[in-house]
Amino acid sequence: MNQELDALRRRFGRFLIPLLWAHVPLLAVIAQMTGRSLIQALGAGVLIAGAYHLTWHRHGIAPPTRYLSAVALVAEPAVILALLNGHSWQMDGHMYFFAMLALTIAWFDERATLAAALVTGLHHLLLLVLLPGLVFPSDAHLARVLLHAAIVAFQTGVLVWLIRMVVFRFHRVRQLHAELSVANDRLTERRQEAEAANQSKGLFLANMSHEIRTPMNAILGFCHLLQRGTLTNRQDEHVRKISDAGETLLRVINDILDYSKNEAGRLSLEERPFDIRKVIEAQVQMMGAEADIKGVALHLRLGHDLPHVVVGDAHRFGQVLLNLIGNAVKFSSGGTVTVSARLTSAANDRATVEVSVSDTGIGMTTDQQAKLFSPFAQADSSTTRRFGGTGLGLAICRQIVETMGGGISVQSEPGRGSTFVATVTFGLAQDAPLIPCERLRSLRVLLVDDNPAARQLLAEFFTGWGVEADLVASGSEAVAAVAAAAGTASPYDLLLLDWKMPGMDGMDTVNALKALALPKLPAIVVVTAYGADTFAGEHGVEQIAAFLAKPVDPQAMMTTLSRLFPEERREAVRAPMVSERLQGARVLLVEDNDINREIAT
Image 1 (cartoon, rainbow, N blue to C red):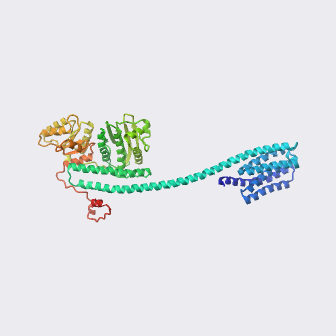
Image 2: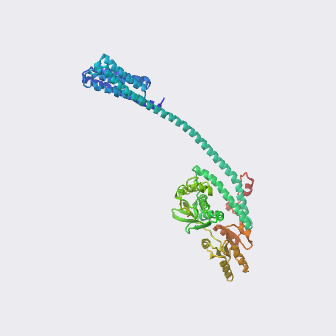
């Protein structure tokens, strides 16, 4: 059974009821026009329409109704032909047979059409024998009847072919619908299985995250406890590196969960105040060692109008920066990578910050740039093989910056490097700049670096803190400046010395200062991109007060200087304390890990 076909048949069956009843007054009009019996014409019309109406009422669209309708449709033109006997329109009445025969196609049942054609042929043959004048006004003979029968047969053949085609298409559509329903059911099952698998993956990631975070909490916690104690400079640097590595691993764990959230479209952002300068500097600092390995000079330029404290998601912002800087270093060999940040607009407690990362690396073609932000895509397959990576980083970056109300773009030329520009919108918060203590403000500082950009950057740090700083470009100039100042009332208190310089390098400068035999040398802080361990392994460190890694982190530099030049009257360093109203409160700690219980205690 085909429901669509049956619906059409019901509509046609109902249509035939008023059509056949409408022939009753039509037959009366023809009878009156031709002078035939009105009663007989009305009786014939009522008999035909009534018989069909009754059959429809009892059987609906069943075959008896279809066959009866075929007879009724042919009977109507037969009665009209009888009423027009001898009239000039008698021959025209034959045309009505073909019209009524064509109507039977709407049953979409070739048997009904064949029945109507058969009744038409029998009607003509019967009248040829009994009343030949009803068939043709003149010259009625079998050949003419057979010609009409052939025409009816041809029309019937066309109608039957069309009916078969329509019925076949309906059945085919029905079959396709059934197949589609089965496919949809299977697709629903697969979707449910995929959702279950995705849920299982989420549970697995959540469980693994918890299992990894527990020992990570111990690592970071003990690093914090060690840093609260008394450590040598070397020990403090080792503990800090362990803590930094732990934080990096923790970010990797978070990224695993973040990628799962991004994949499911559930990326959420935090709204917390943070020091945007510190976040940018931290990402640059993090890439310092890798940049040094590849011989890439990292430069950082922060706009003077860049706010210190903004409200947003520091982790997500840092994730974007780290990816862009990491790519710039990865695709550069030698040369420079410059990270810049500036405020582009500020209104209604919202600030738009533009961060650009420019490199002098391999660059990209226009076609490569077009697919750069697509998932799992890099510039080309050879790039992937050469430099590695999944190709997800930039796609995630775009998703993050767009969620943060900004966008990301790239400008690049093959062999001339690339510049990525990301804009992000943050909320504005009260600035919280780094404020040095009074002891640091009174220092006289000499900065030594052969790189003008690095020298100027250090000078801007100290200028912003209100600290006087002199600048020289070589070790020999530094020795001369320290010797000259030693004979005055204000000798240098601090010497920030670059290690790798042409001619007299950092260690040569230290030895030359030592050879001056001055009453007191300034505190010497070596700035190096190669790490304190490398320096200490090659040279003695008895004259070195501290080390700072390139690119210099202002917070790390202030912490180092505060340790080297403590306040003359300062309280002992204490652990962070809760507010007084909470001191003495009883705390219940629920933790199944022994180490974490120890740290918390």
